Amino acid sequence: MENKIPSYLLQPGNDQHELANAKVIRLSFLDKTLMNSATAVKSIYVQAENASKENFIQKISPHIKLISLIYLVLIISFVSHHKAQIIITIFIFALFIMARLNIFKVYKKIFFLAFIFGFIVVLPASLNIITPGKIIFNIITINKPLHFWIYTIPQNIGFTENGLKVVSLIFLRILNSVSLAMLIIFTTSFPSFIKSFKILGVPDTFLMIISLAYKYIFILSRTIEETYFALRSRLSGNIKNSKIRELISGRIFFIFKKSMIIYESTYYAMVSRGYQGKVLLHSQKKLTAMDFVTLIIIVAFGVWIIYL
Image (cartoon, rainbow, N blue to C red):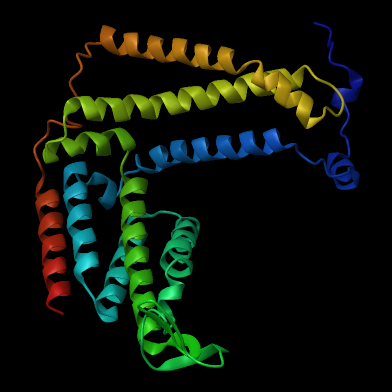
């Protein structure tokens, strides 16, 4: 049979050289938004894949994980000294190592959230205006103290020792809480974790709404991405962002309608397979000895932290 492949496809090209000399293409706002959205959606799929790995943390029952999460978050909230919070941080970090997750990637997200909500937001609480105490670092000095209603602004404004202790304690609490939540998220699939809320008496209707909304987000995101890139593949040249926005806005209804059709088809498929509006537990299996041992260890650890 004669080879009909063009000769230029059979010749090795200098792709790397051409890419190196090529100009950097600036993506439009919509391209960047869709690419970031697609990355976020794919990361959730990656989370589900990570949760399917076989190791000690993944084998623990989702019900035990939910109980442990609530229990340890309460312990983290009640503990008010730095030593215990640091021990909890080390304990959670050890669990991440046991789960064989990407420590650098996960903790980069954890520290970002903890830095924003546990440091930047509460940093003003370290000023002597809010938390009185010995000033460690003076920021500004005014001519005389100011009195406004029931508030008094001192002459020297700066960070106090007690204020920095309060901020560091809040930072550790948020860091530990976010780390623990991330550990559960990356070691438990979303459907099984949602279904585990039945042990708390959450109604089936509420769990069904959350589960179906979770599926609908993926369907709608995938539909928008496919429609947009199918449209861009038929365009040539540099198109202004305003023109692209006009084209996309004209297809919003079509995208929504298409996603609704796919969503309804998914629901009918669930009904045809026996779905009756009731959320079944993730597993009808009995709790194993490992689950009971894990729960005992978590409870003992929390009691030890409280009396430390």
